[in-house]
Structures are given as C-alpha cells and as structure tokens.
Length: 68
Image (cartoon, rainbow, N blue to C red):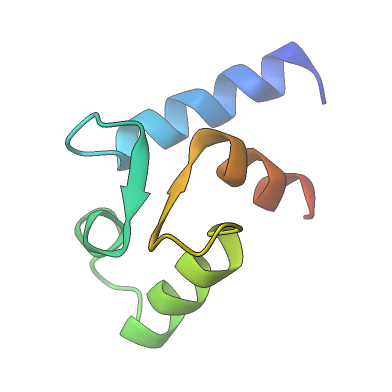
C-alpha cells in the first residue's frame, strides 16, 4: 500500500474517531454515517474488529480497507 493511500486512510480514520482515542466504536460509526442502517453499521464494525474488543484500531481499519 502506498504512503499516499495510508495518509488518506489515516485522515478518514481520524475523522471518524470522534473522541481521538485511536479507536473507532460502533457509536462513532453511527455519528459519522447517520443514514447507514444499524445492520450495516454493525456489520462494518464486526468486519473491521479483528480482535473482537468491540472497537477497531487504525491497523484493523487498514487491514479491512486493504481487502477491497
């Protein structure tokens, strides 16, 4: 993955991570994507949350985005 793509992903991650703690929660996804159905939000969080802790880190986010 290029440095440019990583920078884009970091900017996107930071925009969604409302409290700036380095993790994206389901609540933050709902705030950032208010028109997305709850099922889609839950699915997105589960797909990204590799370690099952209920939130996902930047590293987990990058892994998910690299699968596209």
